[in-house]
Length: 197
Image (cartoon, rainbow, N blue to C red; front, top):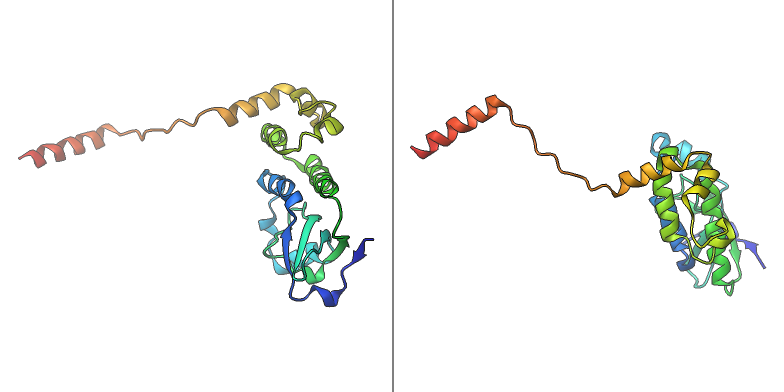
């Protein structure tokens, strides 16, 4: 049975990401998002977003709470969040790890697919195909992978846009050599001659 963690039980607890939800958490953290929360980084603003947020968790050992959903919002920071103001739903400790993984990915993808930046679709394509569990691919995309045409349909953009973004991701970055002006060459040449004297 799922229960709300009482306020008195929130003291002296440590919060960690559940191992079955870690890939979904890391995936979410790795993406470029539409808005930058650091631009709203006041204490009152943080309180506004954190107070009353709902987190889903399991409590296996006394001092540790294992979070697996609710972290898929831009203002969540496991090291900075004041959990005493959060609503923490505690699931039974024998809750199936496959269900935990599905709930974690459901929350992450619901948020990501509604807030990804249009200039990050190539990155999203790569990240989904690399990190999303293979067993969820057919459920979501009717294939064992996310195709460019499918992402184009989902994001209301063109396949060529996604292809171009992916090309930029894979294009080797060529280090530019600084251009030396003729004046700098003359000075350097003069220094080299004076050093040889």
